Length: 396
Image (cartoon, rainbow, N blue to C red; front, side, top):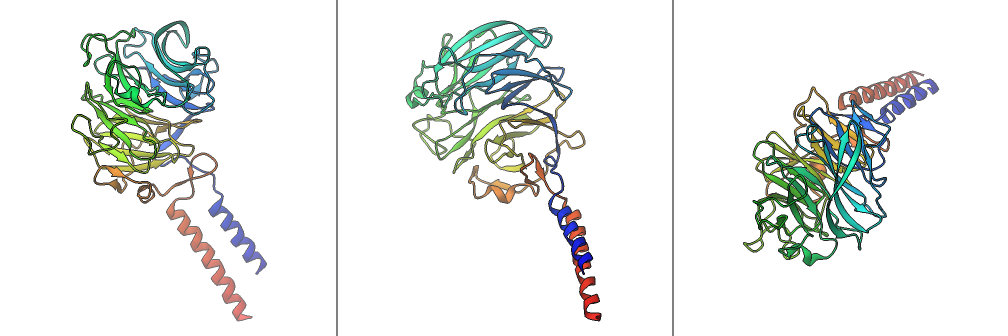
């Protein structure tokens, strides 16, 4: 009987303590980062990573984080929404060898947009492009960057916890900017030749992305306790904050495509084929919305929370967490299917778990556990062993 109990204990340990594995369909591709919040790809697949708290742009090549940072900025990050917040690569890189960064300047106590000229894997020249809002309150700094098909740089700027700035026509806060690569204002901007605004009415956006087929610009926006939003951003659009949250407002405000109440801490986004992906900062859920929306599904969950989502030049989807970069495995070109979390474009936190994948996060860092089939086999062995032990005892 003692041997049978020992065998049962060993099998139970195998069932519960198998090493964690990555979310199904993804594999860890680079780690050892301090607090990665944003990535950008060069055409050859080289990755530039914004490592937020240490203020370093790190280079990742062939799964290795290079020892020497590409560039370092003097940043200050006493709270999560400050630090080195965004990175982008010129679309004609390396013939135009510029890497862009958005960060909270520790010396000037304000956000800055800068760019660095690359020479190999290090920066050899810096240009200051734009002074942005002061970091007085430490929150709502925005900072995500993306280049459009038009060759222009799109920049998310929060309202710095001064809500009314988002509705100032000629302001600099609470909006998405559209800039020439040298930081100047394009002549065809929607609000005039001297206004850098592409769209206003933003509260605090952690994600801007461009559809590589249509050129459509998408942006996420975080609400206070209701109405985290995913927005299709038209030129000159007013997205409503602080007058309107979520859908159903006045006609001069653009309704979001998706709105989440309670909030989910919506972060980075990326478009791949006919799908738009976006992440959750705390729960680590990866969402997929088939364009044009609004139905969406949770198709993955990543330990530590998702800070950014990106598509590599080879078409693979990448998911960024603070310490690990995950790559979609080559054998799987589409995400796992899942139950839609909403049919109306509005999802709540109570709906999310029903649509999440079967692999749950583990303390080790990745979603883990045995597959369902393996679990059934082990459970069967346990039950069979106990029944055999019982029969032997009855015969005595």
